[in-house]
Length: 98
Image (cartoon, rainbow, N blue to C red):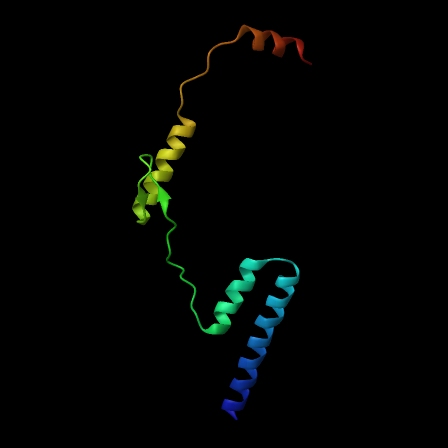
């Protein structure tokens, strides 16, 4: 009895994955289609994968700490830059614009 119910549940689950993959395929959502194919094939998703990031010197960083350090460097460079040159033309434009 249990095995029969488990088999039905498994088939229902697989059918749901297939139907969702077919719908995503028609909507051109290929990422979820490939995930469904891998799931049906029994391949597990690698949830601990870290993207390779280029450091400032163009070398690669694969470690989580290296990736976080590179993002810190990136945002520090983007946010902490010297102020721009004062422009009287822009000041005049700002005063005349409603």
